[in-house]
Amino acid sequence: MAKNPAWSWYIVWYFFVGGTAAGAYFLAALADLLGTARHRPLARAGYAIALPLAAACPVLLTLDLGVPLRTFYMFRTFKLGSPMSVGSWALLGFGLLAALSLALSVAEGRGGPDRAARLARARRIAAVPGALLGFFIASYTGVLLGATNRPVWAGSVWIGPLFIASAASLGLGALALAPLRERLAGLRRLDLLVLGLEALLLVVFLASLGAGAGVFLAGSLAPWFWGAVVVIGVAAPLVIQARGPGRGLEVAAAVLVLAGGFALRYVVLAAGQA
Amino acid sequence: MARAILVDTSRCIGCRGCQVACKQWHGLPAERTVFRGTYENPVELSENTWRKVKFVGEGDGGAGWHFLSDACKHCTDASCLAVCPTGALVRRPWGAVDLNQDVCNGCRYCVAACPFSVITFNPATGRANKCTLCPDRVEAGLEPACVTTCPTDALSFGDRDELVARGRKRAGELRARGLAGARLYGERELSGLHQLYVLKERAEAYGLPDKPRFATASVLGGSVTSVLASLAVGAGALVAFRQRAGKEE
Image (cartoon, rainbow over the protein chains, first blue to last red):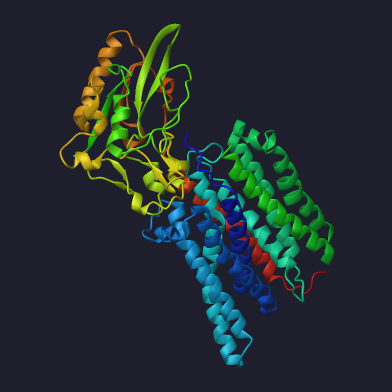
């Protein structure tokens, strides 16, 4: 076993903020690529959520390092086998693309139809690498934890996909809180689907740990796990969203999902450093 | 030509000269220690103690001690080097895993990755520390400081292949003398360590993992499962965003 890296609150916040940014971005990009004109405001809101959060990520990571200029050491080299190395570059690219996508979607509303069509095409082109980077940012932190020799994390291949499902629900949660004039059909069903996927992946992750799952199920993290991750983060929003549409319910589910997504990242980080 | 240290625990008398020589050469400060029933100190390898002698009770009612001069194993499949995002951890051509302080940014990924609990974060410098195998000495024709100091030749430095052959022979001799569990540790572990151990007992008795794990072995599997989850979310989005229905019902 390895020593404790002492990745504490800055990293928990980074996982949460980065996951929300990634989820909001890849949903916006998918809406841009797969949706119709009705989805444009949704996509723009997604980019608008993603950009400030993506900008906050390097700040949180730099606070963790403690010495500001040392963040740039991440860009001395590129190592395909190191999730943190690839992740650093990906975060740089993700931030730049989030800025580009938002700029293009804001500019689209100004000028004639020819210009709007060109900008829309450019935005869709940017959405392709953007969506891929979004999925990468959402999951690489989980793959990174697997690539250690700490208890719970070591060798796990299920934290990455779990973080993807969670990032999707975080992105939907953030979008549900955005002031959009039109609530689109299908988003609620997508939310149900990703919450179901998250529940499934939670079960698979715990099953893969065997006896090691005890730290979540019965240990000191159990109240956080059962209360915040399972009930607040998954079960309650599932029940609320399954009951049917409604603005109040949607907002309630979104707040619960955001709290649960934060708790998920906290318990996973804490479990490997107990 | 790969070089290595061979630690023959059957020759070690627990004098801790290696531990002191390491501190002297690298200018590492003393640590506050506590008496825990033996002269073993400090509790574990740290940012200021890159080599220490572990004291392992003999077991089976015996009153003796097994000593293990513990430090970085300089693995061929080195987890720390594989995960380091800055390039601070570097491989010397002769096998050592060196740590370039100027380039380390204190991310602590190596700390979480090392399967031997060796590499440690130094809060005073905000960077990681571990045994470097003394490249400054070795590349000037000297042995590592610990090896030079060892009074019983429990530590030797040289060509790795020769040391592997010597270690195997020595383990065979020990088995012939009745130490049934004697073995050479590090010949194949993590594709070969550059710090080899002749052990008198099984590895776990010394706190060494029987099958140390290469940290990044799970990256490919984790990437595949993450791609599958992304495809599942993408498929859900395809259904959700392709629907003709307008407003929420």
